[in-house]
Length: 386
Image (cartoon, rainbow, N blue to C red; front, side, top):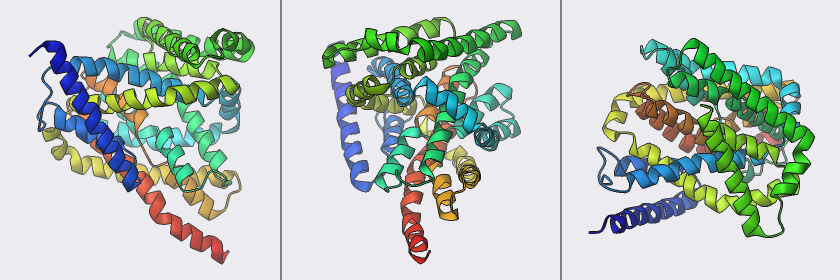
């Protein structure tokens, strides 16, 4: 059979299967991310039906998925919001960083994986899934609650931390010398600083260049600019994801809102491909040996995120029920965690890191929203009594 025909058959079957899994997740009221990861495990090495031809094609789609995920995440905020969040919630953000990066780093060191894998695992356990958390807040009607701005401010702080963390991780994974690594990190920090300054002072000029009354032209400009900056960032040994994230930050207002609406279907398509590709790179036979460790790490992470939410909400003067809701909303892990693990796996940080991260995200991406739904009636009962 012709090579291109095989790619179409395999890729078409993958997308159709993802559509069916997405429909099942929608009916069950859970995030589709765990199902996408399971699909990748099924089609990868050691899976039920390994893909023979289209894996390279899917890998390109996965790279685009990372860029679009981070681009749309950046579009949710502007430079002013990031700066104000950094100033107003720095203490809670630092508590979040320390409490939730520590479990992953400590575990990697205890297992003897070394400092590079420890740095990667710190990121895997640190970041909350903005997408899943936003869906939980919306589905359960928590958007208007007093604790929601606190939760969102922590997500913004995490996103900004990721913009600084990813270049450091990339330089470390590349095995650069101390001098080369310092130069790379310096370039990354300078890039982030410059983009924020440009967004603050010249944001209107950028928006004027990108803006268009035609949806097709607007989509082409935004995606083209994101891919261009992502490519430049990659050449400078700064993560392409960071470049896309910074492009999103540079756009704000109605333009960002319109771009988000246009990008949403495209992002969801390639993001699903990305999660499948991560599963393809993970041998499912290697997950079972680390399942117990992943479950223990997930339990610890639930407790540390719960403590983070309670601390941040208490500082904001929110009731105990609101404090608990804030903590539970921060539990899910997803896109950022898999991006970090994917970078580490590609660089060969440790062979068990990918399976452990996959199992960890599977647990928290599925259990986080479920836990929020299970405790919702309890919160309602407490509110009625109060």
